[in-house]
Length: 502
Image 1: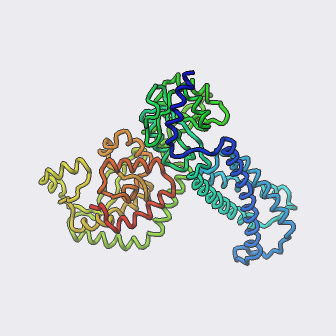
Image 2: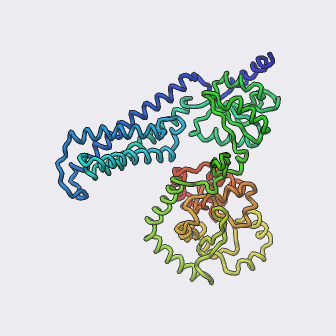
C-alpha cells in the first residue's frame, strides 16, 4: 500500500523529463534485431563487392604489380567467392559482430572486423595449401582482404553515425537509473548524459534515503525515491540499465541489489569503480587462483588506441620534417643573436606514469631571469599562483614573438619523436605543479602530455588554472582519435589569432 501511494508523485515528477519514451520494450528489442539484420546484409554486400573489385584489380587493371598474365576461370572464382563469403559471415558471427554489446563500439568494432576478415582469408589460404587443386591468384586474395576491411569499416562507421543521430529522436536508447545521489553519482550522470554515444537515457536517481521526491539532483534529472521503489520504477519506465555508484551504498546493500537484479533478463546491473573521480584509465578483471581481481590500467590508451595516436604523431612529424629544418635553423640563429645564452632551454616536467623528462623549448628568457624576477615581488607571487605571467620582465625581445606564435614550443617535436610527448594531450606540468591537480594528478599522468590540447584551443593563458585542469580531465576521460584530429585542426587558427598567448 505504501509503495503504491509513494509511486503516484514519482510518476508526476517525471512528466518534466526532456525525453519521453514512446517506444515499447518489444520495439526496442526489435530495433536491435533489425540493426543486426541490416549489418548482416551490409557485410554480405561489402564482402561481395570487395571480391569483385579485387578480381578487376588483379585480372583487368593491367597493374605492373602483378607480373603473371593469367586468364581467370570466371565460374571458378564465382564459386570461390561464395565460399569465402560464407566463411566471412560465419567468422563475423562467431566474433560477436552482430551482438548488441559489440555494436557501435568504434575502435573495438574495427578491431573485430580486422580479426574476422583476416581469419576468413587465412582459412581460404590454409584450404588452398591442403588441397593443391584449389589454385587462386595471391594478388586477388590479398586485394580482397584489404578492400574488404576498408569497405566494411567505412560502412559500419556510417551506420554508427546514423544510429547516433537517431538517438536524438529516442531510438536505440536504454532507459537508465542511477543508484546513489552522492558526488560520484553526479559525476557519473555528467559523463553519461553528455556523451551521446553511450546510448543511455538517464531517467533519474534513487538511493537509500527518504529524500524529497522530484528534487533536482543534476540538471533536469531528479530524485525518484528510495530503494524500496526500485521494483516499481524498473517496471514503470521499462528500465534496461541500473548503474550503482558503489561509494553511495554499503557492501550489504550492493550485495542485496545484485542478488535481486543481477541475473534479471533484459536488465543490466552495472557497478561503478567507486573511484570515478580518480580512475580514467579503465580496469581489467583477471582471475588469480580462481579469485577475480580488479586491476587499474597504468595507461589510459592501450592497444589500437595507442597505435592510432602514435601513428598520427609520427605521420605528422614525417610530413613536417623538411620545412621545419629551415625554421629551426633561422630561430636558433635569431635567439643566439638576440641575447646571451643557449638557443634551447630544458624544462623538467612530468611524463606518463610519473616518469620525469626534459621538455625542449627555444629559450625565450634572459639567462639571469631569477635575478630580474627578484626585483618584482608582486610578479613573483602571481607566478607562484598561476604559473604564468602576462607581462614577464624576464622575456627577451625574440621571446615575445616566439611565445605569441607558439614557435618556442617547436623543439618539443623532438620529445614527440622520442615518445615522451604527443602532438595532442593535456598540458605538461612541472613536478611542483602536481599538487595543484590534487586527486586529478593520478589521471593526468596516465597519458602523454601534448604540445597542444583542449586548453590551447579554448583560450590558452586566458583561462583560469582550475579550468585548465577541468579541460585536461575532460580530454583524458573522453579521448578519441577524432578528438585529437579536431584539436589539431583548431590549433592552427588559435595560434594565428594569438588569443591568450603570452
